[in-house]
Length: 68
Image 1 (cartoon, rainbow, N blue to C red):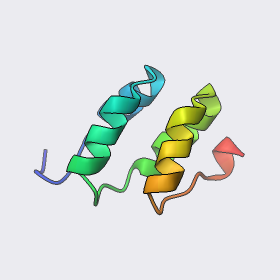
Image 2: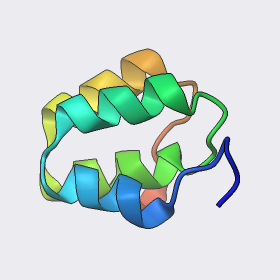
Image 3: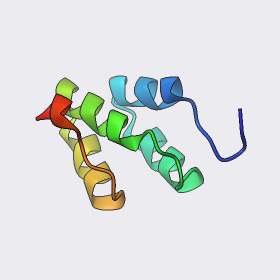
């Protein structure tokens, strides 16, 4: 795994387990990561509104049609 890359599985597991603190950590440590729109979609699909709110306030990524 590249230093500036996180696994989509780690991101997905954090969202699926409602781990907002881990999402915050990952966002701080990997600001250039490109998998956040998937995380927003997953959080929205699971009803994890705190994670959706945090990511929407702290990322330029947005959810896709999957979450709408």
